[in-house]
Image 1 (cartoon, rainbow over the protein chains, first blue to last red):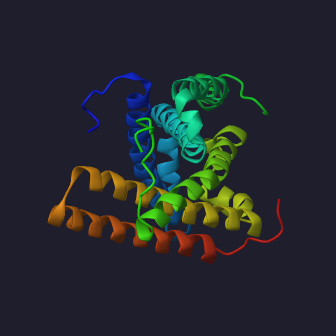
Image 2: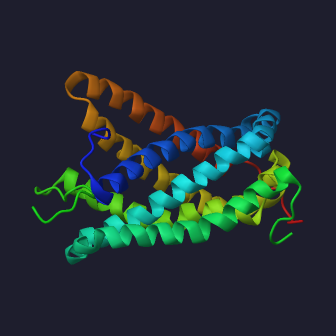
Length: 125
Length: 131
């Protein structure tokens, strides 16, 4: 599945949905464990937090946010087509609309997350 | 059924468990569109991770029944949605005994995360007056 190319936006939308879903699931497993340490072993949690707040940690944070945003937007697109089948005719247009929202929301969030690593000012602070 | 695009999983034809899961995936997906995206924006846009030490969580974020409830609701929703999503993925690539063995491990992990996540959000002492 995944690797057999069937062509066009529909197949890419599906593949990205699956990859981003598995990526988010992996982080959820890690994240529940690290948050458990806030109560169970605060010093260990603080050490993990330093990794999250480092430059490579922030890059992964941006990738996680991108996976979450894509999965959320494409998930909404799937729900729309599941419950309003006539919209499947426009499944490509809906996908491109997803990318417009993805870029519009993603750019400021990426800046906000990466700014401290380069000594730049953040929004709201 | 031929009118389906190659997106999304076709609604199961039979009634019963698979159909219930199909609907619940969409319902939990809608909930997560609000809960998970809000969570990410609050913890990564409004606040910087640099700030979020164990002390900060105890004194601020989790010094609030509302945010603890929010986080526990998010935990329940995300565990349901992500683990049933993994179930779909595993079912697409594995069959028979291998699938059963992998899914036993996956379900065990889900139960462990349910337990430790619930323990930490419910048993950390409320530190009292907000700063």
